[in-house]
Length: 338
Image (cartoon, rainbow, N blue to C red):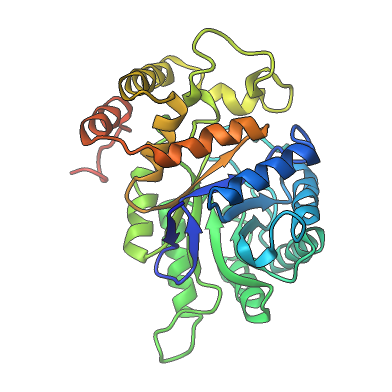
C-alpha cells in the first residue's frame, strides 16, 4: 500500500487508515485481531483510535494486540485527546454534547490515560478533539507543545476544525515558537482530521484550501459517508447495519436523504461500469483527492475491512471522477467563489 507524507513533515502513513470506532463494542477481540492482521498484511500502517470510542475500550483492545499481532514500531498510532465533536448540524455519535474540554489539564490527563490503555510510551500523532470557544487557544496549544517536548507524542494535530480555526492554530504556534527565529513551536499542528466523502464535501469550501496553504495534511474520516456509499441502504435498512442499531442510527441518518441517494446511485453506476463495488469507487475517490494523506475506514467485521482494502487496486478514470465530482458538488458561493 502506498505511503504518503503528512503535510510538510517526514511522517509517513498508509493511504488507507484503520479506524477502531467499533472495537470493543460491535467488534470483539477476535474480529479486531483479524482486522489488524489483514490491514498490516496489506501494507497498512495508520491506526486511528481515541477514548471517545467506547470510553477507551477501543484503545484497550488495540493495546492488547500491539506486540502480539504487530510490532509497535511498525504502525503509526493516531489518537484524539477526548471525544471527537461531529461537524455542526450533525448529531453526536458518542454521547458527548457541546464543545470538548481542551484545557491543558484535561488534554494531558487524556493523553496519559490513552498511553496507559495502549501500553505504549508515545503516540505518533495526537489530535485536539475539536474547537472549544471556552478555552483559550494558546492554552490548548501549550498542551500540544508539552506532549511533543516530553516525547509522549511525536507530532500533533487537530480534528474537526474549521478553516479559520486551523489557520489560527497555525499562527498561534508560530507566535509561541522561538523568539526571533520565525520557527513554530514543537506542538505545531501538522495534520487535521475531518469528515470527507462524496456525500460530505464541506471541507472543500475553506478547510481543505487552508490545510493545503499551511502545509497541513488531511486525514479523512468516514470516507464511505457513514456507510451510505456502500449502497446497502438503497432498498431499506439491513438488520445488521449501523442504521439499525440503537447507538449508531442517528450517526447514519443525516445521509439517508434524497440528495445522498442521487450520489449513491451515481457511485453504483460507476462501479457497474468499472466492474468493482460502490465501496471501492467511493474510497478511491476520497483517497486520491488533492491534499488527502489517508482515508480512514472503520469496519465491524474483518470481511468488511477486506472489502475496503480491495479498493487499493482501484484507480478511477478521469471521466468517472469528473462525473462523480459533478453529481456531488458542494454549494459554493461568496466568498469561496467570486
